[in-house]
Amino acid sequence: MVDGGTKCVKYLVFFFNFLFFVFGIVLLGFGAYAEIRFGPYVIFTSTNYATGSHLLIAVGVIISVISFFGCCGAWKENRFMLIIFFVLLFVLLGLEIAAAVLGYKDRDEIEADIKKDIENKIKEYPTKYEKEIDDLQKEFKCCGASGPEDWISIKKLRFPPDSCNCEGVSKDQCSTFTLNYYYKAGCAPALKTYFYDKLLVIAALAITLIVIQILGMVFAMFLICRISS
Image: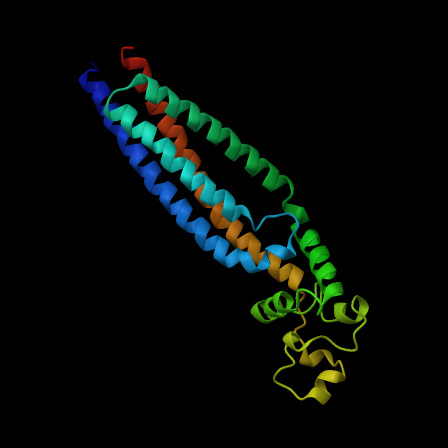
């Protein structure tokens, strides 16, 4: 059995695991939302930054399972379940830190990779990726990878497609390739900004998660040491 002071830690461990479980559900929901928002643009990045939504969903499920061991171990004062909880948290923490380091290391390559992938898709337009590229240019009000000139230099077209904002003017105006009639911004920097904004939210969630994990590990270890085997 545990004394009064240790019981307080027991309830804290239970409370933190409840928060952990709720946070896991939040990650699961955000991961599903990110999958819906990122989904249409995954093909434009070979670096798979957009598939971070899959990682969020997986982590959300894992957290829900881990929190079960923590809650049961704390409530029943079960040393074995608390040890499992601690080890799983430690492994998850290590994986999160490794993922963060790899993501930070490759952060400067995002725009270059996106630019290269968009250029490759432009070469196959409109045989392939017509809808994806048109949707991208309309959604972000951009044209080409770096600008409307890409359609001339890469695809060897006389002028960019209508999705570069030629739908509101006459065909004669569009066919002259006057830059005033096209979006001037390239899609690579626009998509990079879009991914960065989402990654900042993911980073904030990850930092919050790590803080909760460390606190949970500290309280769990204290409780493990105080519970008689």
